[in-house]
Length: 249
Image (cartoon, rainbow, N blue to C red; front, side):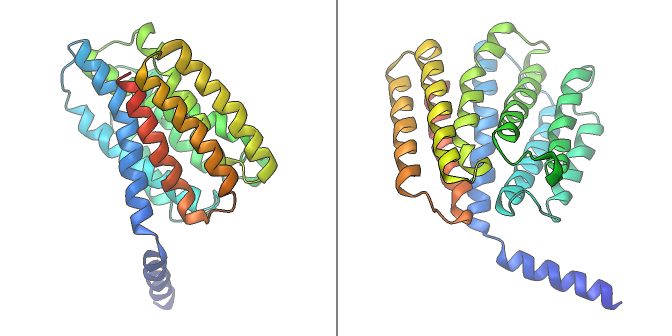
């Protein structure tokens, strides 16, 4: 009885300390990022709504919540296991019927947050950033597009490269906490993102996206010691604006 009471008390204290505004901003922004391009491209290819998209939306909300909790707790959060478990259940419940590859990728994204907690794997760095960016870009976007069109195209996958580059660049300050390595990682991934924009998104909106990349690097230099609770929501908002510019570029 005392154990149960203690657990409830800990949960109440944790909920009180949780930065709800930052959490809400992150979850909303991340889901807009994930859904904007597949839905936009699906409209161009005359895609149609599928009921499984509602289950997939529940999955993306759960996994974005887990992502924020992990980021907030420096990749070690007991409570993040709850939305991770929910995302696994949603994936296993038949989100992707008839496409085993996408189902496996979604399960890998959920499983990634369980693996990254293992300190001995040393994934709280650029390697973890690369894995996260791959899993945060392709499985969900492919699943959304597949539901609408019942196929995947090479053109669609190619056009996910700007979104992948965005994830690499804007999530770098979260995965790389060492100041010098973080600035170097931002410069390298920033150059990569600018190169991808110049190749695939040559337009006025693309130029605006490049401007945001430059401003983000300058922001990181001037606010290198930003409090942990503000890092994820600020960078995800910058990523959101850039993503929307590139989607409609």
